[in-house]
Amino acid sequence: MSQKVTKAIFPVAGLGTRFLPATKSIPKEIMTLVDRPLIQYAIDEARSAGIEEFIFVTSRGKGALEDYFDHAHELESNLKRNGKTELLDLLRSTNMDSGAIAYVRQHKAMGLGHAVWCARRLVSDAEAVAVILTDDVIMGEPPCLQQMIEAHAETGGTMVATMEVPLEKTAAYGVLDVAEDMGAIVRARGLVEKPKENPPSNLAVIGRYILAPTVLNNLNKLRQGAGGEIQLTDAIADEITEGREVYGLRFRGRRYDCGSKAGFLQATVAFGLQRDELRDEFLDYLNDVVATQAPAR
Image 1 (cartoon, one colour):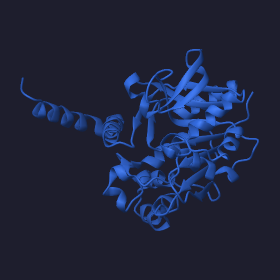
Image 2 (cartoon, rainbow, N blue to C red):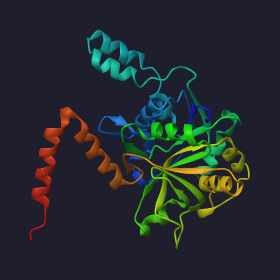
Image 3 (cartoon, helix red, strand yellow):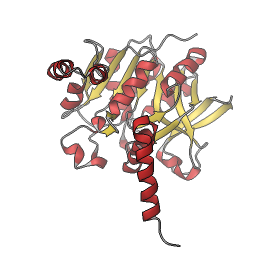
Image 4 (tube, rainbow, N blue to C red):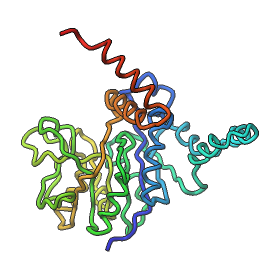
């Protein structure tokens, strides 16, 4: 039985250049799907999985992200004074207790592995830690990280979230070389970052990880990999080389790549249609758009 996972690392130091000019003045992580910022979806998923300590790896210009989790006393007082209790409860649900969040800086963009390595002093060498990438928003029940933590409690080792992708798209992902397929869980014999040809499978790693403590030790090598960056997948692959177990979980749910404009729009539609107060009006509008913009045949 593995140790309970209670800490999560959120690498949020990226510049969000694919969303310029919006990200000129606001961090991408507080751009909203419907009425909640991307970071809130990640935090809610972590909380539901039992995460108690939240480590943000940030960079210059991310002050608005840090401010988002502060108590907005003036706004709370205004809502309370006007009897808007539902909005007040919603606002308070975004607050984080003092000491629950820690921030560390990544001073130079050197890859995901480097971002996770920056948080190493806030994680003991005896505990597993989760990593959540806010670009990957996952609609699923139970939430993806909760599924992973439940599976990890049985397997131990290191675990990554995986999904099947077309073979021609594997060059955009870390890809598992599968040693044993047990259905929802697979045991890996290797892990290849963005294979240019001959991918070992079509099982791609997406932005959820549970890392054994030894993975952070592997990152101490600061070895450059694909793209000249320090790759987290390389440090995970080292686990297999050194005889430790790495597993992939085929999570139940749908992942939206909100690091791309198309994925962000798709997620906006999907989460908008989930809302009871929006669904009917929004669906009518979407049907009208499809009908009026469909090309003539």
